[in-house]
Amino acid sequence: MRKIGLIGGMSWVSTETYYRLINKEVQKRAGSLCSGPMVIESLNFCDLAQVTTPEGWDHAAEKLTAAARSLEQAGATAILICANSMHKVYDRVQGAVSVPIIHIADCVGEKMQADGIKRAALIGTRNVMLESFYRQRLIRHGISLLAPKMDRVEEIDRIIYDELMEGRVVRESERTMKTFLTNIAKEDVEAVVLGCTELEMIIDTKANVLPIYDGTEIHAHAAVDWIMGEG
Image (tube, rainbow, N blue to C red; front, side, top):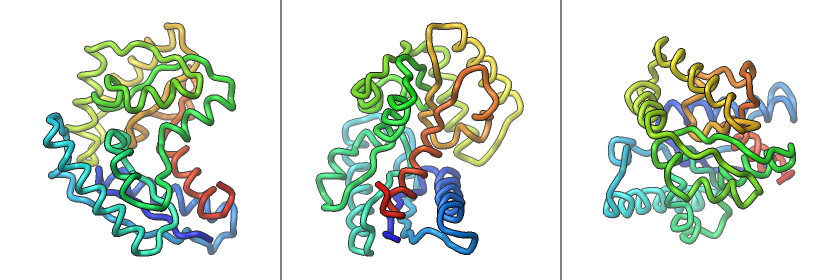
């Protein structure tokens, strides 16, 4: 098996999910006693949460670049950034290392394209929903995206940062997300993309009116493809 590196801590909740999903999938494919060879750089999210300024993003890029170099030096043959929003600095981090960084949106886009999905809604943090760095990756795979609605954007962003990233599941927020998904299903879309690694905490990805593409799970399975030499 090939060793893979995770840039985590953004938040620690999602990193825990990645570790679990990767090892469960390795166990499924390779045998009940097997686990994936991994090295993790877990960052302090206090330094990186809700970055809005160019200076803040420069700082984030420096932190992730240092983490990626450390993972490469530790023997990682590929790297995952375990946070959708931090893919905003993906190009700068990838340019600093010689091993591939597996882009979460490319993994999602490839799966949706293979499934024949043409139009979807993207939900996640504010910058994922509004900025081009994630949306354009999906569009390159032939996916048309529903225009974001600002009231929905603000509430989902609040739930993610104020609750989920602290590891808290609030019943009212579960109901809110169910309402949002029901309303999205009434629009001209075929699927929903979870563009936040924590959203699976309050969304049942297997029981919804629309197919749910959970980026975390898809990304983790792509990591296992790499570990097993299938990617």
